Image (spheres, rainbow, N blue to C red):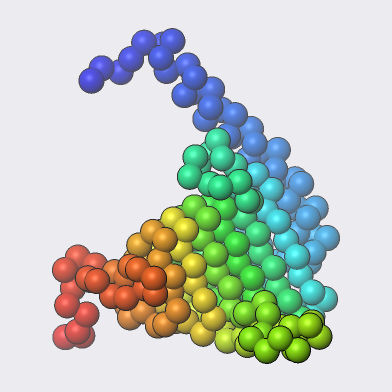
Length: 212
């Protein structure tokens, strides 16, 4: 196909200009929001829409360098409307490495959620390290929260659209989790996992998953 006429290219070009303006306008507001919630963010962060933050006074949120947060449906049409959101409860930690990317991602930590370098989260990913309510009805009525166990996601992991990662899970380096999967148990490095619950269905680049 050809390059298209100027009239054909104009809407697409203006859309990208609008996104760049959004990013530029969000940057100073995010400086203030990060300061307000005392969240540490490395250099080079980009925000397409405002990142939502909530941190208990005894919680921690640390974000590495060159991280991108996409919270606008015009930027990613797969978003279901919710912006990127990070929530750290009492004595909880969220640790995000460098060069990570998020689209409408929600991360909730009651204990600890740690992401390595270059982790990519597709649209509407949810990562939560605890059950918000216990199974016991009396405990629920008393306002107790359910069990919590840390989540570790290693370098170069790709979580597809609508993936849910539950408490106590470790996802090994280079793993790929297919869209709509629910990860409730550990996934080894370089695995491709899919389903509810997620199970290994293959290996990245044909790797047999066995170290030489």
